[in-house]
Length: 195
Ligand code: URA
Image (tube, rainbow, N blue to C red; front, side, top):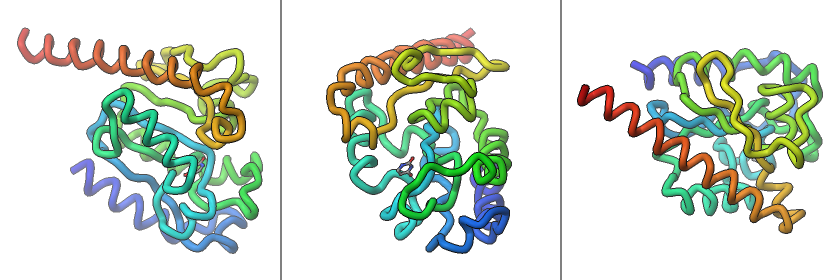
């Protein structure tokens, strides 16, 4: 059911022409992963490799993201991964506010269908769009905020960690904190099933 709903949404999204990024994309990068997973990661937008392959975080930043996922016993079968904008901004520039707004409906629908318990914003663009327009990653990373029953957390973007490796230990702490939250959630769920 959830798979079917997402597949329908993905096929509508594949034809999206809501903003000019549609003119320069190779393909829409809708999202990948397990739609039943409790955690959704949201990046900024596809880069070159993602645009070519149609899947999020498959370039160098994706390799680093996979490493962080592995450390906390996650992989792409145990989470869902999407982006704020589904089409590559030319030359990997930041997506413009109007492009983000034009695209956000797709992510909202993904969230409505997947109903993640935790949303992790990878980088400033996602955190400012989904958590707080004034979000500062260096100051607020790793803080969990409850928004209408969904826990939201912002952390460093993997591309930023490639450029500034000195932030990697702090990012690792955020992922470890995420693991703690996920374990708490799983314990709650199994308690409910038993009780
Ligand atoms: N950077 C992002 O924000 N998203 C991707 O999918 C790849 C790189």
